Amino acid sequence: MLAQHNLSASLFARFCVAIGLYTFPGVALGGQPELESKFGDWEIVCTDATVPEGPSCRMLQNHVAKSTGKTVLLVSIMHPAAKKHPVAVVTTPPGIYLAPGIEIAVDKNKRFKLLYETCNAVGCHAGFELKPGVLGTFKRGNVALHRIYDAKQRVVDVKVSLSGFTKAMERLQELGR
Image 1 (cartoon, rainbow, N blue to C red):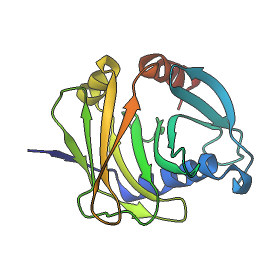
Image 2 (image 1 turned 180 degrees about the vertical axis):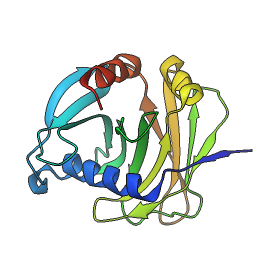
Image 3 (image 1 turned 45 degrees about the horizontal axis):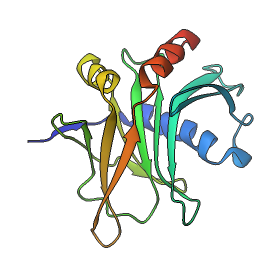
Image 4 (image 1 turned 135 degrees about the horizontal axis):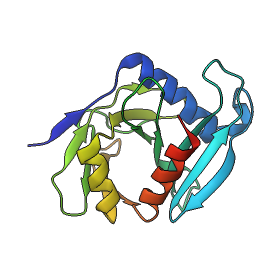
């Protein structure tokens, strides 16, 4: 059986705006995100946006189709002050089949399912909290297989490398919420 994860609507909406700041930096409100550091296959980007919450940083891994240059999957993690645990949002392009959600399996561990919570011009987004058990699995893992479905309901598996995940998470926590 697949476990399901989701975030509160208001937190999720704020997080999707933050993703938009990275995905479309030309239209970013409050400035373009800058690469703060890179650990393995993960980047940490920070914005100096003038918002009540102050600057924000997040760790990212962006998967781009070689044939089109377009993003097929973006994993973005941040630790909002309002949350006890970091949160992750998986973004897929608009026009995919939403009903089955996203299935994630780290190495040979049990799969868990994310339901899409919203779609916008950037894409469709599904989020989850990285509670200690899930976070530990990601830190120990090598690959997180993300299963999505294209518009014709065909399976698309995207392998997200976990190389550098632990060090990037440590740096994200050093930078603060």
